Length: 239
Length: 269
Image 1 (cartoon, rainbow over the protein chains, first blue to last red):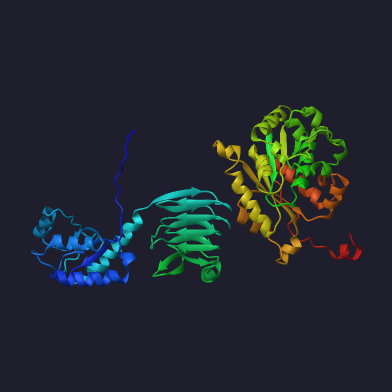
Image 2: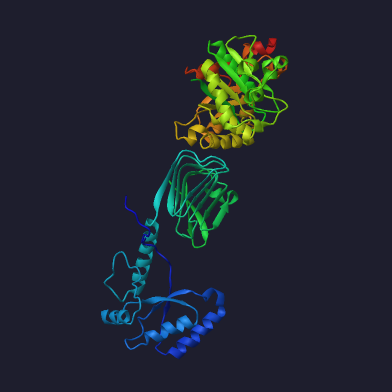
């Protein structure tokens, strides 16, 4: 049996990227200080990447790293669409360079920036969904029972009784009636969805945004799927 | 080895003891050796419903504590010789029961009897858990009423997770739904949950539907289990339950409103 005390797993995180528009460190410093002062707790140890697409080769990479660390950010590395030479220079200096995930159809038209943006945002979403495997529960989930699909999607082959709770970090699919509570995207996955063949739930929630039964009048008793549109839950008929 | 059937519900007062008594008599009448055990320590009722309350000398707890043998505690039914009752203690604490000592008693009973029927107390605490732990089959007694259905669902969850079969990963307990105190008139009026509603929520096979009947109260007070009242609707419904338990397919009676003909309405009856 393969024994391993460590394991590397590919995981997606949403990282903030600081886009630099000027070479002047003094200006950068002033603006950064102002920003941090707005919410010092929020920015404390805030992980940040620095996008250097708009700065040139001669930029003082070390200075920006020191500045960020002085202001108590957690500097991760550089990013941006830059030349191979610039990337090698950064590596030689001992800093990480990461490419933002651009999986999917690459558009050859570089002047149509909006298109590229949207395309890679969509595929990033799909990638996030595919990260989760499925936990399958066969049989009814009875009152008082709780099923938690940790870092997985949940598929229930049966109904979820009133007083029962099904929770998943990913999506929830119920081949039966949902009469209890279903909480999807439990760890912050905003795109999680809930599917069931008969909506009679006590509560549904996606990433903390919830509906009680009173909000489900539109599709009560029907096969539905529920998703988050912005910060609002929406239900749609399945068939 | 005997077949252990638990009659449980979660909710109180739905008809567990009434059904245990009826099913005990019914199975024994078919020639099987049956023992009925009252698991409701401290609130014993089974002996009353069976009409043997004046013959209780030793009880379940006495046997567990070694103060009496099974033979001394078991009460033979006066009507059917192949039926015996093991009454509960009225004065003792149910803490006397443990999985081990209950298991030993059941094992000993299994040597002489074909069916061991455990009449469970209400609730989901130790008494009810003890009654369902060793079960091979469960008859979940439910009234067509929302709180009873919710509690039955809860007990079904316990049957599939806290029983011996669940713990050892054996074949799961065979679950049956027994719907009691059913009134087709009130269902038609929309006041009561229908059979379909209950089966849809609980999703277990329907064993029987016992109509609401004055015969049940009469039977309790007389100490004569209602299945012996062969004229009553409840008695007949319990007869059907016995057939189905033994594997026969019987159509469900007493589900529809009785249409009284003009003659019977004029002349009564």
